[in-house]
Image (cartoon, rainbow, N blue to C red):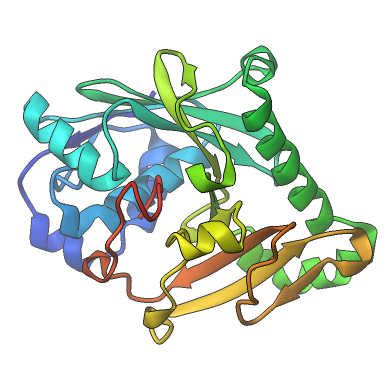
Length: 271
């Protein structure tokens, strides 16, 4: 396992430096390293979550050891997860068919793979989302999309997809797996995307992306329908009442202060 200890030194350094090369070195060398209290400061949460993304892409389970008080960890986790310590996530990586789980305790973030048996124990609503994510993955690699995939490979496979399960869409967010409530997540690598299972009704309730920051965010859209209707577009389309719409975005200069996430508008895991 790799341990990333959180302390209060070198905050400005890590705010200025790109974290991904550092994380690559951590993973490769399997070493312990001190970083800024990324799980403590909400303004640094994008860097903290790049750490999580990198960890998701590693082959072995990794624990993030947080050198902070339980109150600090609770507050940081609440800031980052926009929920509570009991909310964790399942991560699905379509490019290697690995399913990962995040187990959150009061002082340790432990990331481990979920077995097929664990997945099979998921309620039908959660399994359905896995099926939809599988469909999405298969379409990326569909033989008709080979050339497009090659053109978009670096972009698509460097994105992280998060399944947002709004209550208005009828998804069960209170599932207890490994004594933790789980959200769904589809993780690739370092950047961010959102998968919204939504409808016009849920969109009207605020379960949608904030398009007001379009100048800072590059949006793309994938509509999951039949094979002939599969598409990858440069701009968002209107919500389709009967389809799962995947809205992905690359963060150019993420500013969390521009987002007002809460349980009533969106539940998200990263960024």
